[in-house]
Picture 1 (cartoon, rainbow, N blue to C red):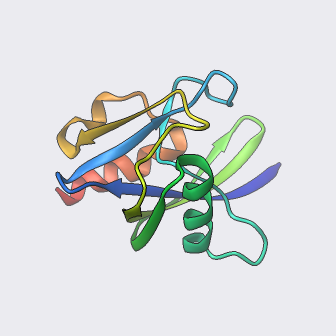
Picture 2 (spheres, one colour):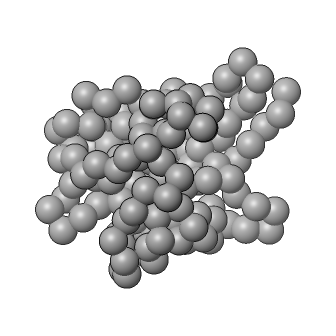
Picture 3 (cartoon, one colour):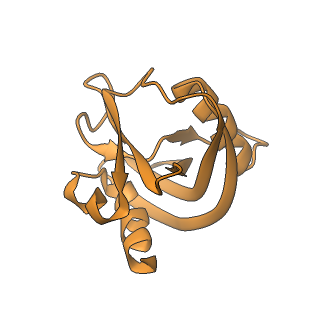
Amino acid sequence: MKKVNVAGAVIFNEKNEILCAQRSPSMSLPGLWEFPGGKIEPGESPEQCLVREIREELDCLIEVHERIADATHSYPNLVVRLITYKAKIMEGAPAPKEHAQLVWLPLSEIASLDWAPADIPTVRALLADN
């Protein structure tokens, strides 16, 4: 089975809200929510991947902070290893170039969204830290 290493950014704003991204109808798992990010390229660190992916997906420059979770999820035809990090926007305002929508939510409300299975361990880790 194909394995993919992915990095995700848990981006906090000045109100301590988290940026949540809804997958578009053209993506796999349409309508589910995720932390923005993408596939780690060969020779790229997860942190480098996040800076590149967030620039491409949201047109923002981020600063990557500590790791939150490193979890593997087996989908029917794919195994995804998702490594998530806390991050902060240094330049720009996020705009959904690939996602259906973006929302800022306080930590207390993120569990109300229908998350992609690979992102659920990060949601649980965030809620456990609170």
